[in-house]
Length: 220
Image 1 (tube, rainbow, N blue to C red):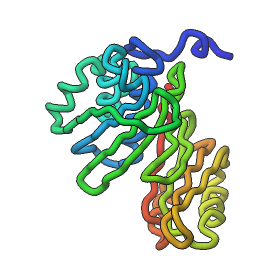
Image 2: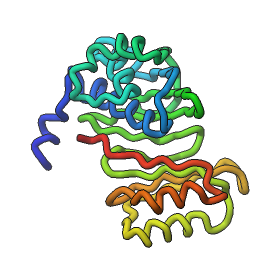
Image 3: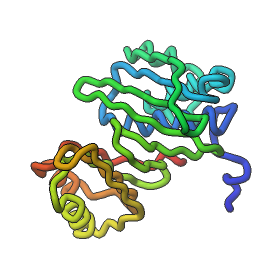
Image 4: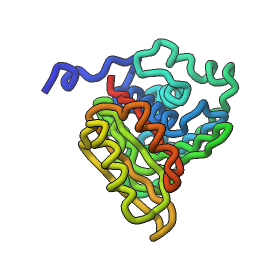
């Protein structure tokens, strides 16, 4: 256990789960979208819905989708900053079922993409994104992570793993999810270091790859 495990993350505050965690979830969602959002709808569940305003959750979520980190002093002005940057931010209360009480469903719309991202703030600033557009994923923000949407065809996972191995990138954790056989699928791959630029671009141009996001760590 380290010092930060006892005193919590460096942040504007007031809450590691409702503020720092919320900001990190929204920052991960922005990275997943791959572009600046034009509109974001936050569906707040459980404790996020009931006590979020008092803990700065709304400000933290808006800050994250603008690319701010939990220790950025501009977090307190994030809603005004979003308005100035032309980013529409909407909040509503939702019931997401049997999930962690600090959970949010984020629907982000950009110029090219629309993405629904659901994740939970687990306490102490720790987070986990577990759903992207209905696909099961595991994104904790603690290490570089590749998220790949692809056509569900035999051998895709092995081919992606080979590209990583050729770049000497070690896989720490891998999840694979599909909605139906032969349809679309998604994999999230936590790695020891980011994939280099050339193999990343090669991966993006494979015929069975729909899109690739390389997500940097957010647990600073």
